[in-house]
Image (cartoon, rainbow, N blue to C red; front, side, top):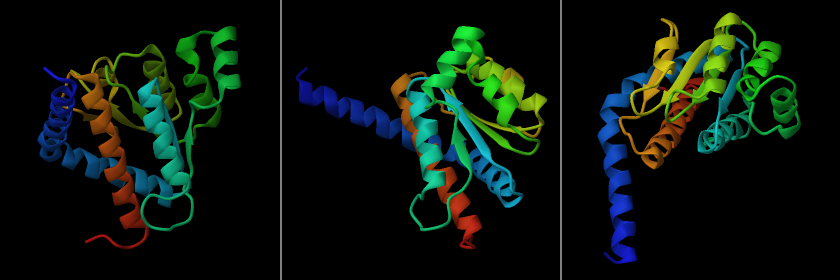
Length: 197
């Protein structure tokens, strides 16, 4: 197989994963966007965390919320807990890596805030601790997962939402998560700017 053929196969796998998940995930995306927009309208904020490519995904979400997605609007309060190396390494050094997000959530989270987590496996210890901390702070959780949902599935409460990418391929899961983020941001903007159908 030549390299160009391999690239085409990768694109096709991505297209199939995205199109195959649209109908399944749409109702969950609508719920997540409604939860998030409702929190923002009540002067609440969004805290977001993930590891590796999932960290990049939630940082992208935070950037879109603070700046803009497609339409111009005032910035919205969304804080990615991943970019501050000083805080992350301080917590990991003094306590443990599993606490790098939960310690921040316990300090910054307030009742009614939203915690957005992304984890392709659903089993990262620091994400599990983050969800526990959010529940302790009476926050709601929007969880982007993949594969079988991992341990996160067990932690989702009645007022939370899990959006599980229907794939076992890590790259496809991340691509679906990015599309989910964009869809959530679009629905939030449409609601806040009064452009809902």
